[in-house]
Image 1 (cartoon, rainbow, N blue to C red):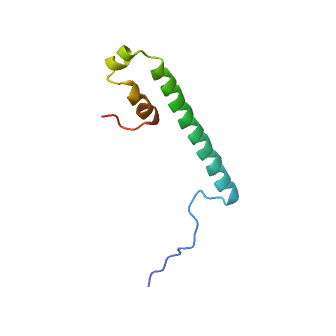
Image 2: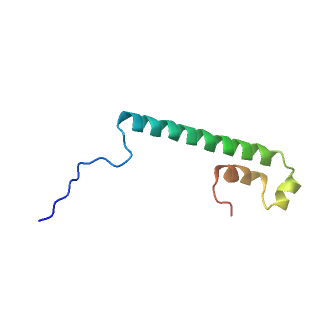
Amino acid sequence: MAAFDTTRTTYGSTGLFGRFDALVASAIGMFAAWNDARATRNALSGLSDRELADIGLSRCDIESVATGETVI
């Protein structure tokens, strides 16, 4: 008869410090994503309507592009 243990923790988990490290990494990732969106939004907002049209965008597309949503 075969048996396996299902009470083991996942590899890489080191208890409280592992969770804290994951929380810090998540916060840093969220800040980086916010900063990338902010920089993209500022760069595209600085373009004229003609320049936006040249790259296939309009003013209403800026937020979608900055947040990574698909623009159709």
